[in-house]
Image 1 (cartoon, one colour):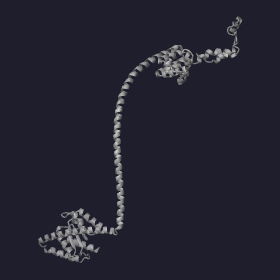
Image 2 (cartoon, rainbow, N blue to C red; image 1 turned 120 degrees about the horizontal axis):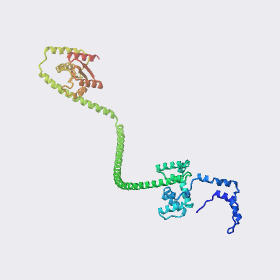
Image 3 (cartoon, rainbow, N blue to C red; image 1 turned 90 degrees about the horizontal axis):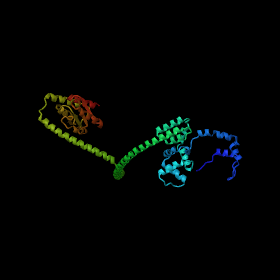
Image 4 (cartoon, rainbow, N blue to C red; image 1 turned 30 degrees about the vertical axis):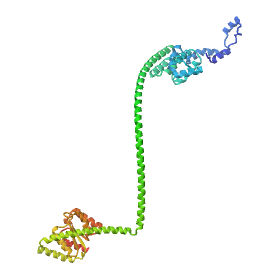
Length: 433
């Protein structure tokens, strides 16, 4: 057993006289009696000896100072098996081949005396449960120690509290026995809980096995799907690169065509003039077709007029007066095309006679009632002067005539009343302007 140097014992030994003789020699009787009544030479040694019981009462007990009944539960709950085996290996300077039970029994046996193993166990307990020891240090009575122990049992953390309570200076023998009893029951309950936990653990292992199997299948499916997605993404990436290349090629072709077009335009002098002439030619052709249509319509109207009996003398006289009045207007209609849009069908013949006497070409369009509305714009394009009968025309035809004449700068005379006199006054006003 390893004994440590005790400073108090050294002081007492130094103060005592050397009364013992050499080994093997007998001491005289008077010397023996003198040794029994010798007093300490140092005056404070007696005081130290007198204070020793009080100091022992305030000092925490060591592991080897506890009762043997406390060693087994203390080693069992205070040290995990791995830590206990490691400490035993360290003390023995080797590797212990005994099983866990034998290691436990050996450690419990060594705790009865002070030796290297018990000192190592004492040091490990002090280090491991230092926070609990600080909490128990505030207890001043046995009742306070018991209260702290009961709180630790209720919380389920008994290892550190068991060590701190047993070694506390105020731990009585009754409290020590009660703590051992409580720990015994806690160990029984822990065993029952362990058995229940083992059942739950086995069930959890089965669930884990099943879930691992399902997870493996899900991972395999995910791997297949990721491979398919990667293949699709690769295909789409290749298609995207092809499309980008095609777009770049088309953009390059467009740029080259633009350059070539500019070069062609620069190489052909008067290209813009030719384009305008071509557009003007198309307009003239359209106007020619419109005039041919008007000629065909006029021929039909002439054939119809030949079949109609001659107008009464008063109407012819009125027309003649109007014509004479128009002859006096400053408006020159000779060799000009006049288009009359709207009006009454009965007055069309009078309109025609009035206009054609001035040497102009007369054309009529009813605004889309019977004539084709799509040919109105062609008729407007072929006319030099437009007469719009606002009182006998649809709103659509009126706005089309007005918009066309405004856009093309064509002269237009608007007449509210479809009578011949109103036409004459309108032409007169147009000539005055």
